[in-house]
Length: 329
Figure 1 (tube, helix red, strand yellow):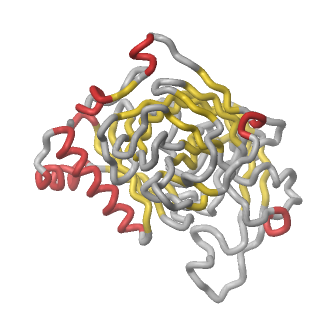
Figure 2: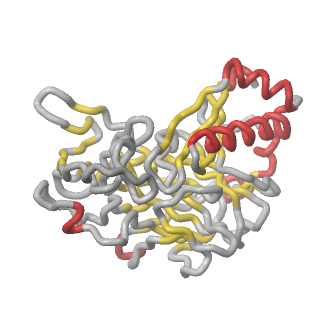
Figure 3: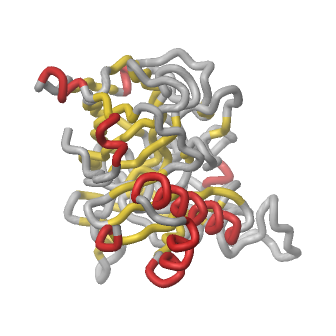
């Protein structure tokens, strides 16, 4: 595996490939997975054990587990409480508490019969709707379902609009130390961040809180605007390929992400400004710890050149990524 990072942490990466010059690829199919999970935690038995540097090809479900098959399938009628099915957990040999996992998204491709894409409005859910946390007097917005043809060439929205295929993993996690967290909630373990930068070619870093790390993933999107405004992106089942490495002795507070162009810290809390604060504070710590910046100097520099990415503004916690271009590092 080629490590994108030029931080000191790259010297602490345990890679099976680096040791043996071979890559082992595992298939996590629907049959191998068996039961999908709707919580993320340390109590499920791993469905797969891998070595650092191994690659895993994963058959993910959409966020509704395929329950919405036609545009007549209203969410209030066909969806229950079990949403956002997750593959995993995947046990990573050598991963210990205090380490981090470096998970590179190699590829995401749509699978399943057309129309394989789904987006919809759900009662009492969404960025411009009353919710169970934001009470309003107005009636729920109408339920509308769109079933869409999705290919690697794009998503046909209507006769005039085709949306580019820009896939990413909506939910990717390691296990918290003690708690099980529902798969809809993002926090320090990762989770349902719905951050479009978790896309092919990029690496997401997640904290290891339990032996083996316990990787979960699912909820892949064919496209999504910043914020996932109505609450539902273009959900679709996929064949997703990841490569997993272990970074020794890198005790993360929040998830981090790296591309060829930038590094990013990811905060997921409410209110939204606290998510931004968490992300920027962690990015300052990263610049100080691994790039030699003085904290106040990093604080002032990010004021001029930092950028933020709004992942979701609809989930139990909101997600914001705070980043900086590598040209400044």
